Image 1: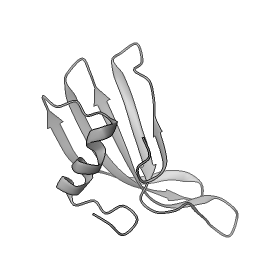
Image 2 (image 1 turned 135 degrees about the vertical axis):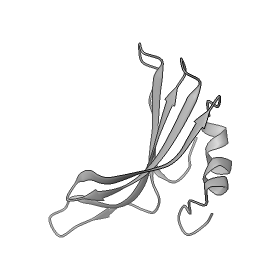
Image 3 (image 1 turned 90 degrees about the vertical axis):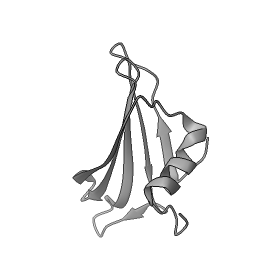
Image 4 (image 1 turned 120 degrees about the vertical axis):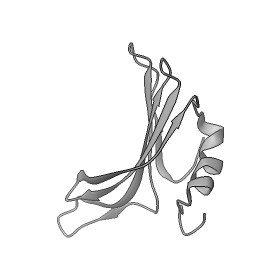
Length: 97
């Protein structure tokens, strides 16, 4: 799956959790060579059948300013559903909804 920029999808861990993250635009580095920019983090809880979507900022190479955008109960998403989910939530990726 290739969506957004630096798309990463973990495997399911022993607690039934998996994670997806990606940048909303091409990777940018600040004056110190550290990652900066907007990104999305998605937590998928397979045991509770729940997906939670956050946006956050990379600042000085670390994640900051997490904001919960949606908590989807009784919904577990996979890679192919991410583009539609971002459109549904109004999150623009690379200038495109």
